[in-house]
Image (cartoon, rainbow over all chains, first blue to last red; front, side, top):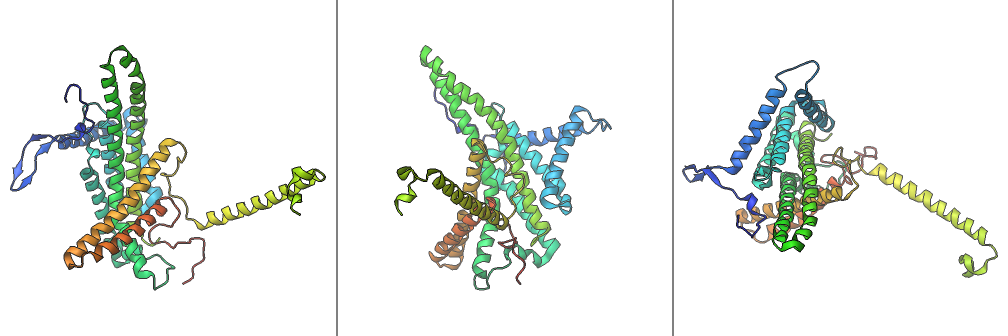
Length: 252
Length: 133
């Protein structure tokens, strides 16, 4: 980064680490891919070591893993019922990936995978496709009952169904935009406040005295970002649960 | 009659006027509570989890992002569908116009749904009502 110019967007820049071009496709291994691999490996390693002891009285690592397991399990059971527990591995993987990616993104100089909409959109589309495929496998054309609210006059039915279909299709969009926007906005805010500190402190003694305020703000926002990172992973997971619950029982 | 409504002016039946006002307030309060109860009975049960923390500026910020993303998603999907129909069927610009409006409706529906004011997918709008059909 330039010496005196602070660019808050620079942190989202994607660099190719290993350029790979197959045909017309750019399949390069980028810093984003690197951090996805890091997230997956770290999460996998955490659960491997945390569950390797399998004590009746859990160690600290094991009880953390159990806590995460039970948290996700009760979340899924509340939203989708006991039938929804088939989806537990799926929901748990998504929750852990998003949580770990959000948390890793908070380290300085680390890349935040979930601050790119294509990543969150891919996750949301995965959920959307799972909902549709499982809904059709389980209910066949009864899945379409999802789009037909009961108690609507017959004349209004085509319009209402069309609106319901658009509303259904818009779910992966809002699902992905919410996570992406939160992460992007948080990281930019943090960077801007940190930039104030750097810029002000070059202005002599008065600047250094003034830089205390944005510094305090940056510290406060860092704490807030940890909360947002956890909260957004939770929101992403609970929305996944609610969408899956539609696949398990449409029409209720 | 007009001066009776102002208790400070005449001063003859001040306490009586006040108690009358209190009674009227009680009546209003009772009606308000009834309205609230019937509204609560009509609206679906709130979404779990997400809505737990409603106070505080952070929750407000989260709520704002959530609702705006829901609304924008509805419109964006409507526009996307309309644009694709126009491209495939060559009906430009009618598909875009119609589906933009439908997308707007879907966005509003999304907002109401995520605010817990409308029942979820595949449910009737008024869960408190007995089944009609």
